[in-house]
Length: 375
Image (tube, rainbow, N blue to C red):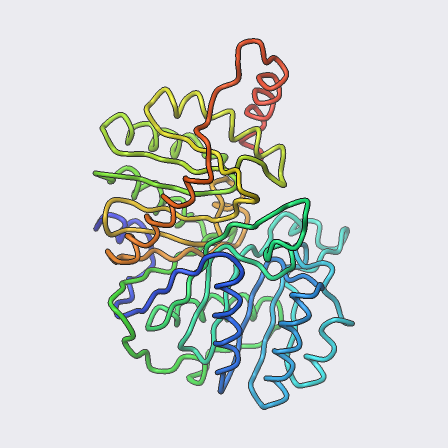
C-alpha cells in the first residue's frame, strides 16, 4: 500500500518487533516487565490514569524504579485523569520521579483549551521499547467494574527504530506540560533492528493541520483491494470516510465493521447507528459486539497493512484530540490482527435496522445522526 506512505508525513521505520497485546492482562503484564527492566528512564503518557487499585499499583512500581535511580516521567491529561493528584503521586515525586498534567482543567483560565485533550497512550522504556494503543490505566480495564463487564482492547509493544518516534511525541507533549527539554542523546539511543516489521507512527491534533490519521485511514480504505476489517468503539465518520467505506464495498472489497453493542457514550452510540442504513445498503457488513465494553481501535487492510492506536472514528480524534496510531506493514501482524477480529466476531451480532414500528429508536438515531458533525 505505497500510497499510504506518501499520504502522511511519517517515515516508515524498518526493523521492528511488534507484539499484539490483547486486553489488560496481556498489556499490563508486558508493561510491568518492561518497567521492571528499565535502566535509564521510563516515560508514560496517558489520557486516563485512575487513582484506584490498578493505578496505585503502577505508581508504586514507578516510585520504586525512581528510588533505584531510573528517571521516571508520568504525563496525564487534565480532564481524563482529573482524579489523580498530589496525594497519589507524592511517593513517586518524593522518590525522584516527575509528574506533569497536560492542559489542567481551569474553567476560566484555560477555557480555550478545555476541548483539546491528550488522548494518547504512550510508554517508552530506555528509548528502546515502546507501547501504544487503546488501553488506559484503571480497574475498569481489568473488568473489575460490574456495570461495564469485560473490557475488550488492543495495544502494541514495539521494539526497534520506531520507538524513537514515540519518544519524540512524548518529548513534545512533556515540553508543553512540564517545560523540560528532552532532546538529548540519552533518550534517543542508536536504534537497533529487532524484527521484520516496518512501522509508521502517525499523530493528529489541533497543532497538526494535515490530520494524518484521518488521511491515512481514508487512503488505506480507498486503495483496498481485498478487505477492510475495522474495529472502533466510537463510530461517527465524516462524509469522506463514509463514502470510502461505501465505495470499497461496492467495488467488491470485504468491508466489515465491528462496533459496540452498548457504549459509555449514548449520544455517540446512537449517532453511529444512524450510519447503518447507508453502510448496509452499500454492502458493508456491520456487527455489534455484545461481550462487554468494546474499546479496541484497529483496522486490517488486505494482507499486509494494519493499524492500532488511540484514535476513534470521529472528528474529535481527527482534529481536536492529540492522538497517536501505529501503522504496521507486516504480513504476520496483519494475520494476527485478522485472527483477533474473527475471534471477536464470535461475540458479536449482525447489525440490524430499526423496525418501521420502532419509532422510539428511529427518532433517537435520527436526532443523534443530525448532531454527528458536532461529536
